[in-house]
Length: 299
Image 1: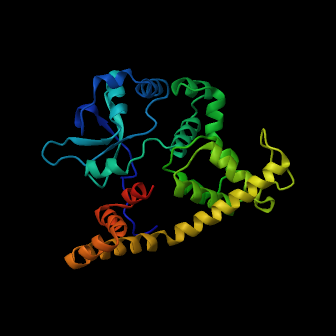
Image 2: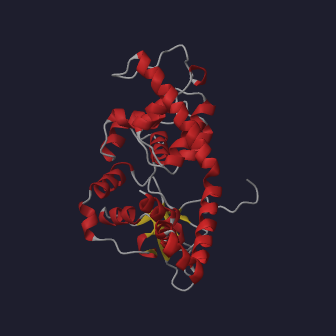
């Protein structure tokens, strides 16, 4: 969109490694991890696919602070490279940037593999670099086939199993969006939950409604009951979600009133003499600092 500032310069820079200054120390133990070995093998086999993220050069020293990509930088150094491709971030506050970075989400991994294949990297070579099987590379390459753009945007920073997309692509776009919203709201990105959402999807919201949904171990009657129960759960969840904000506000106001009430010594004395059980509950409410604590106290 016009007028919106970009987070990075669009053109990567090829910079000498001695001009890159890590923003945090990298432990030597990190070289023993599977993730580091995977990154190192990937760079060795196909080169650096994702550029490092760096801040603008310091006016005095000419050095760039590395905001993201410390493991890649470590692997590049170990492999004996002299330079690295970098993207300069417009926001040079490393702490703020790192809070916003989500390490190679599932959709991002798809784009990385897609770019590597478009550059001509053979599937078997890429599979070796990422320590995956060729069939996994093909599944990741086709991850977004049949998925509407809105869902891709909603899930772009999430980590989830590939089976989620296998279930979603059987649904029409409107239902895909609805299910993605439910998964995000509940923070549940399991394949089992996606399968349950598919089971609860009415035939008219499926891409191929004429094909019966089959789930191992479930009879037709159990499937119908599961669809009905899931629909009820979804409706209840949406109703709760709509009133959640006002409910919390009312709880905060009610707690404030109870605190003020108990601060009146005459009222507190009257409750202690006549309604001791109410006084105990009121004091519990007044001492509660958060909704989580209120839930624990009530349970």
